[in-house]
Length: 89
Image (cartoon, rainbow, N blue to C red):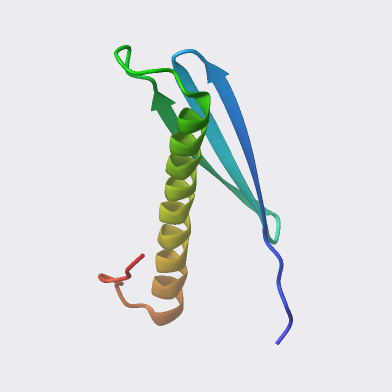
């Protein structure tokens, strides 16, 4: 079995009070998936940019996870000709 390598590149853009992150996953042939996440600083909270970066990145990776699960579900269904109901993350 051959080893495989996937690459995730995360970009973060901060325009107060909103932080946006994109997680680009490549390595599955020619297709690339992009997960997106956003964080917003509550006006009553202290502005700590690292926390916004962490939240936006986590949400982008979570979005990417859901896209991968959806893709795997579609591939399983196409291969087995059966509906997949209970894949877990």
